Image 1: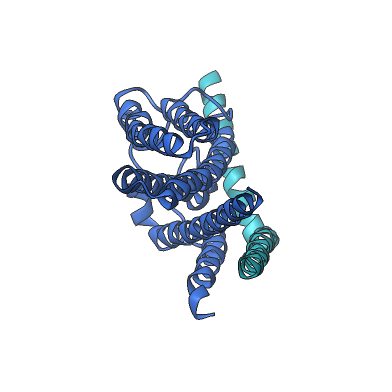
Image 2 (image 1 turned 120 degrees about the horizontal axis):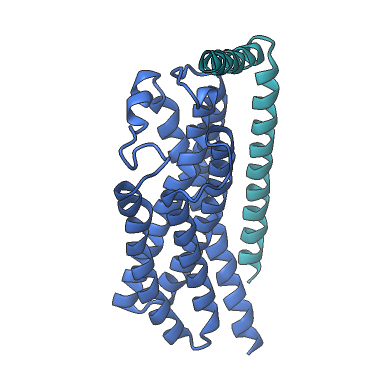
Length: 62
Length: 222
């Protein structure tokens, strides 16, 4: 009885996790996650590009 | 622009890996569920770290052969960038472990091996800076770097495969190759590695150029 309860509980938990992830994809919230991550990454790229230009300027002045 | 195409390529590949990493199809697996998508972020960090340590190792070997200071500088900066990627690999791995294993640190042999590898390389950076004589510093740290790189393989691959490990592909667990083929995960995984590796090269390039400027300024002061 107890084992059945545990097995059922874990099954429900697994289904819930799958449901949550599919809901995220369906309601478009996953798009927000992607947007945030892409913005952070583009920010890093911009910082690197800025540093690259600054270093190039210093190299030229030396 | 012609010289910077690889930087643009790095950006495109990583954006691609982020978008398709979250939207692409993945196999449905028990316990890890959707967290398998972290494979696109966690594993490339370690791969890039190892590639950068390999470049550091090669530069140390060339330095020992030719005694040219440029290789000593490059070896150090590659190791530094490798450690940055190692830290991100550790963080993404701990977050994944928290979800699948219930705690961020479970003394898994691979986790411990990765932490030891990072400590070896932190010690390498300390060793480089602790010897004032540049020639002595170059030779001693290059020899240490060769040993450090060789030690990475038993610590990350050989020892975890011989003992009980929670990591896939270690201790008798099936590797991710099986799942990767099923859901076309390789189409995102390999571009992610290439993209992050190019970013690693870019960061190292900036570090090396900064070091040159620093040396130039210090020489002019003397």
